[in-house]
Length: 297
Ligand code: NDP
Image 1 (cartoon, helix red, strand yellow):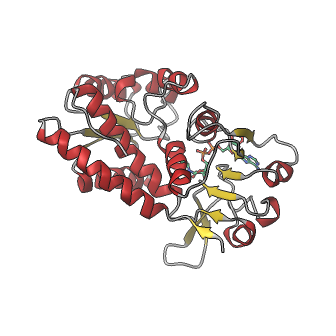
Image 2: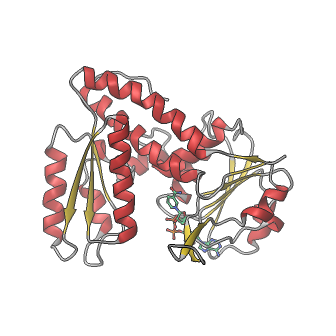
């Protein structure tokens, strides 16, 4: 029987444990604060920040949301960033991507105080992660690690193929999995759009992580018998539904399920973990900035 990995359940456990830590911080007069910044009116981004704010409310984090007109200058965004860097009640914040075309996203990231960079995208935090001294693990890769751990999947000695090399998923995940650590120690192959013979690389893996943004690219014929499949992808494809679309992953779930020993569904797999790990990083940031010790899940 193939195990369908329940990301909602694992994320729920992590959120429950974080709630205790948030109470401890709040009782000590240091309620964790998370700000989200949205520039422009991209509907998907709007949905993401709304979910992040709702998550904050549910667990007792003080959520603040800042909206900036899509036509505003870069300076306007930089002023908001400077204010958030200075605000002692905001322990972590993020600027939702994508930003409008006239904004240099890398410069935006560089201006965020690394101690408040709960996405883990600031160059200092990327460097620390690569060096094995991560301050914040980026939320999606960290969520994937937690999901594997909760499922009892050992990464030590495993051959892992990661399909995708983005700065937010593929690269940090590969870097985390090769660390000399209990949730690392894997042998990692990173694939991308120029990879030749992708199927050979995915079939050879004990664990396949699909993060390429191509609907159902990885099918059952590309998965080795008994492998664990983690599908990070979230793609909207046209469908005869009320909304006119449905969400599918980067893995063709039905055929992959036939050969995998365990697989994450879309939705309900990695997505809820990403959200939970943002709360985790916010609590970690609050604890580090206030000096109030808490146990993290
Ligand atoms: P990007 O578009 O930034 O990166 C995609 C990567 O996949 C690139 O490295 C690209 O290669 C590679 N790729 C594209 N096509 C192929 C192909 N045919 N074969 C092999 N590799 C390919 O995407 P993200 O990393 O931001 O996101 C990946 C997916 O994960 C998306 O579906 C996104 O929606 C989803 N996502 C889900 C999250 C969640 O919480 N569940 C969070 C973040 C993302 P190259 O570098 O050569 O262009």
